[in-house]
Length: 300
Image 1 (cartoon, rainbow, N blue to C red):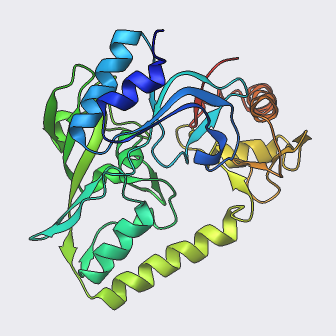
Image 2 (cartoon, one colour):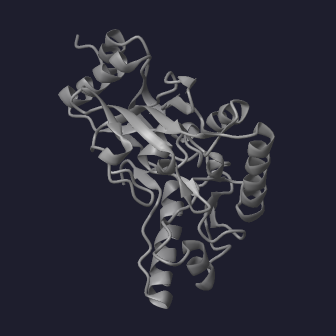
């Protein structure tokens, strides 16, 4: 009898493999159907094996990271979802910090504060992991991950390890331009010495602003749309009169127009329907084409 893909991959890596794994619990939205396989590689060699297996089986790959900028469709993902939990390197190198792709942004900021190294505070409250933040050039308050980034370590789709400098990739608003199909495994940031108490105050200030303006009391995927040039998506959605609009258990936040929240048991289809309404109404009223910031993964 032929062994299942899950068993064959599990026998090839030291990490964990789960078949038909629901992905909702691994996203900040808590929405989404199952992946054909969920792989949690133990190290870079495991990751290379997973990518090679995906290629041989002709299965698409999606790296979940912290799942904070992701909406998985209700029918799930016919491919291999990868979590990089084991990539937890976090160390100081002179005035740089090297961080593994699986390190949570909050943990990275706390480490920088303890080390008296400043420059990452603008990411305070940004959910997710270092790998996801680098890949999507996450940011807030006019700052972005790429501002202090010096190098990125990748495993490419063909299984090669590469180290790219900041100048090697065309980082732009909410995008890195890193090679398609590659996976971020580590990043380094150039920071400046500062008083830990001052760093802590700045982090607290950003968190207070975030909590006051964003619906942190509900599950969401963060900003649904990218801000258009010289404007804000949230302002345009509010101008269109859509705050509080609800489909099923998904709702455009009454607090911030660029957030769709899960009131409990929302479906991906509900979220996407609300996003479509917002895009159409903003296009009609303001003549602006909103672009999704979240990554939509999986089957219709």
